[in-house]
Length: 76
Image (cartoon, rainbow, N blue to C red; front, top):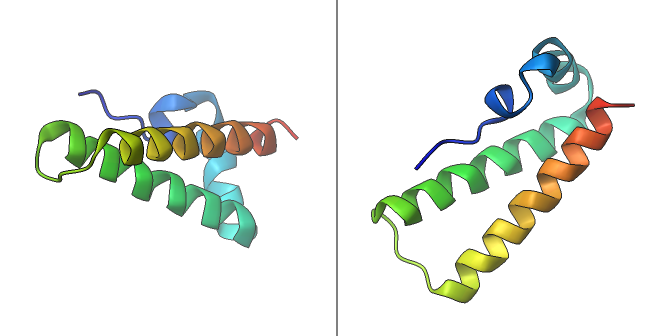
């Protein structure tokens, strides 16, 4: 499975991502939660962590919500 870390998802915002991680606590929390969920989804898909379909669906929905919120903050 392909990884979806933010630096690969939004390469054009690498500098801004770093800047916001350092200067904006809310953005840093979004960034950390995004990466935590991304890693968890990856572990589930690779079979090293078990989850039912409903839980995985909820994780993916939260993951997409975070991605949208992060993208909106990057475009401010």
